[in-house]
Image (cartoon, rainbow, N blue to C red; front, side, top):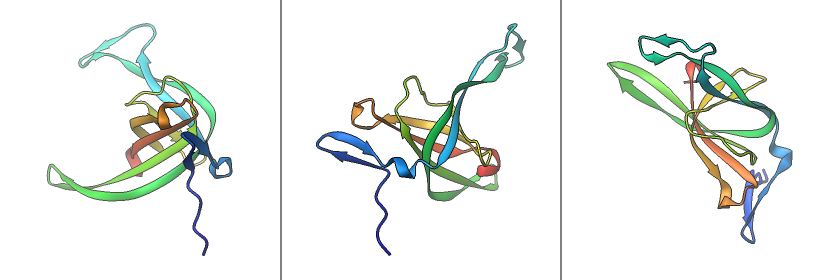
Length: 130
């Protein structure tokens, strides 16, 4: 079986994206203060807000791990989401796979080679994805 080409390669110092691997449609979500502003017991009430939609991406699932927290065995799923670069993506935002409804918390957004061409998001699964 031939080895699959990586989603992103750096050639002569520039990242190149294999556009044929961008088969997932994703959205990026963030949180904003409720309007009109509300305050709950934990501080300002935050609501989910769509940051960007209609994005094509490649989602690569990494090996997960089992974690014991408070005496409970919990699975963690890690993914790398690769797409064309968009500005303003920050840690703690969320990526949603539109087709499956899967939601991932962005831990590290990486501008590959800092060229503003390819964005890789290192994420952890949320909810039923864990």
